[in-house]
Length: 345
Image 1 (cartoon, rainbow, N blue to C red):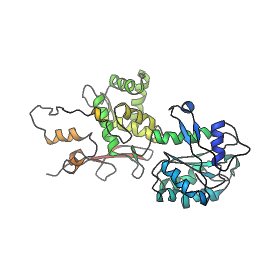
Image 2 (cartoon, rainbow, N blue to C red):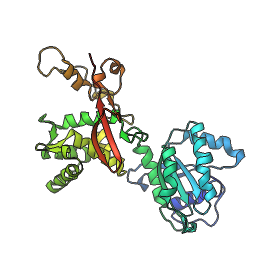
Image 3 (cartoon, one colour):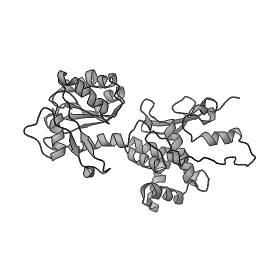
Image 4 (tube, one colour):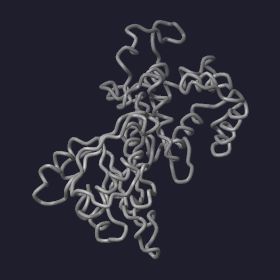
C-alpha cells in the first residue's frame, strides 16, 4: 500500500518474474510466491491495493486481513515520503491494524544523489512509529533488493519483534526473560549456575541440529566476556551472559535465532508454553522440608509468565527499565534491565 504511482505494482511483478514490466495494470491480482522462494519455505501471497478514494473500503479490508504491511514511497518524489507520517502510518493506527510494517522506497534508480541517507530520513519516523520493522530501498527496474523487500515482510511475521522486545524501553520483555531463564535452567544439567562447554554444545544440537566446534564455543564466550565480564565465569556461560547473547541476536536483526530456541523448548508466538508441556504434578522444595520458603517461591515463579499470582507473589515479577533495576547488559545503546521485586513484609 502507499501513494499512487510509487511503484507498488511494478515491485510485485519484479519479484514474481525477476523482470521489469513495460506495462503494468493499475492493481495486480493476488500474487503467490512458492514455498521454496525463501529459506523458511512458507508460501507468500502478495495483495496489491489501490489508493484511489473509491477503493478505500477494499483497502481497509485488505489491511485488516494482512499479516504484514509493505508501505511504499517513491525515492524520486519526497512528497510521498512525507505522506508516510502525515497520512499512511496514522491511518493504520486509526484502523487499529496491529501488524508489522515494512517501509519501502521504490525507484531507487531515480533518487537524487544529493538526498540524505535512508537512515537519516527514517530514524525519526521509526522512533515515532515503533510498528515499523524494517526500512529498505529498492529498484524494480534494476532488480536491486527486490527479493529482500518481501523476505523482510515474511520474516517480520514468522519471527516478530514485538513479543521479544519492547521498542519503547529498548529492553527484552519480561515474558521473554522468564522463558529464556527457564531454558537456561533446563540446559544447566549440573545446576552450577552456568552452561559448560558440554552443556552449550548440547543446547546447540537440540536447537539447531548441529554441534559447536571448540573454537566456536571459545569465540562465543570471548564475545560475551569482552562486553560483559560477569557473563562468563570459571564454570561457563552464566544466565546473565545467556540473556546478553539473545539480546545481541535481536540487536543484530537475527530474531530467528531466538525464536528457534523458544520454539524448540515449546513456546508459541505469544511466548506461552504448549499445554502438553505443563506437568500435572511436580516436586519443588529443594530442602525437602515439606514447605516452600520465600526464596524457594521466588525461584519457583521466576520463570513463570504473568498470572494472577503476581499480585501477591511479587517475588515472581520482573520489570524492565526501572531505576532500581540491575543492569544485565549494555551494548551500543541497547540495555536490558531486570528488577526482581521483593515484598517488604
